[in-house]
Length: 300
Image 1 (cartoon, rainbow, N blue to C red):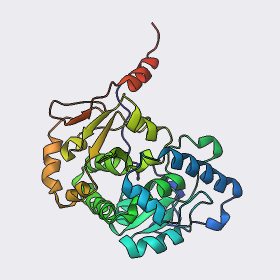
Image 2 (cartoon, helix red, strand yellow):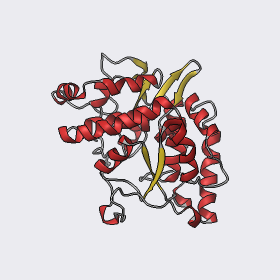
Image 3 (cartoon, rainbow, N blue to C red):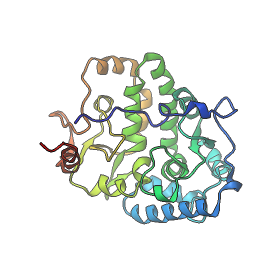
Image 4 (cartoon, rainbow, N blue to C red):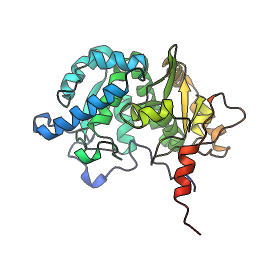
């Protein structure tokens, strides 16, 4: 069974009929309107993920979380977060209704505005929500915006996204965001750690990505990542591993136009593919996704 079609998490699934009045799609967070039940969902998610991430999250994530007003007591107020982020890394958090059109998303990142959904999932959606909500966006992403290197990288991605749109190669750049900002792993002296928000905000993937024998864990290579499809419906089949956050910032100085031309002449790679040229940190068994595929095969 082929992998599902890719969709960038930032814009392609946006409901344009729900466009807010502001041209930049921002809106008031409406913090005062959150209910006790919604704050309770945040508390449940926060406490569960905080326990799971002990010893699993990278140092920069842990440090950022400790420096920000993000705790179990209530859904964070974006204004308070921005008051601390602005003097530190120049970022602010802006409320949006959900997924955004690509050009709007990139424009915000290029100007150091991080769009965060102002809604939170329902109690029956604790384990999975297709569209990123306030828990994914704030718990998963915002702590690393306190790190100057990651802050610069995400801004560079926004600038690069605007260029990629003009060149017609947005799908290639979206893979870089997916395999770094959303689902990236990092090597520290004490082992592999999580820095991707899609992993950090997921109870199941925060365990699967580090502990399960099924996925591949490969050293990050930009051209390789641009060619690699990803999964939007399940755990990743491959995780790409960087040595430190500074490795990401190096991408900002690369001539992407030349790189795009090279990549466009090569076939895309399946999410679980391993090449002879790959630097393999751990070769996955593929057992998890193989079992899922087999379960979809109709009996004869």
